[in-house]
Image (cartoon, rainbow, N blue to C red; front, side):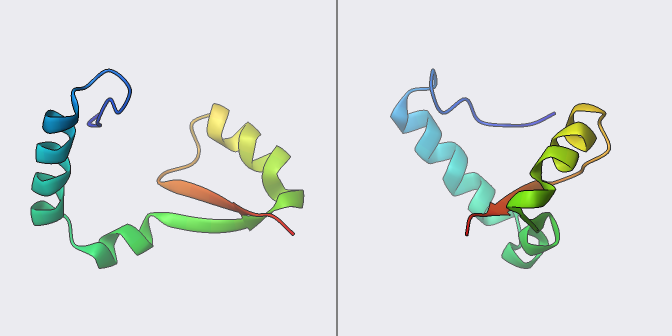
Length: 63
């Protein structure tokens, strides 16, 4: 797994990491990694997340 520790990592290192990611990742690919769900779907989505059946990010629409 690859990620950025935005809490413990010094600001300069975060900025360097985000700049490098901006060079490597095509923004259109990010769109394919995000799925919007309704608030009513959140409990089922949480179960799916905990079971390891979700790839990418879920964005919950709040009415």
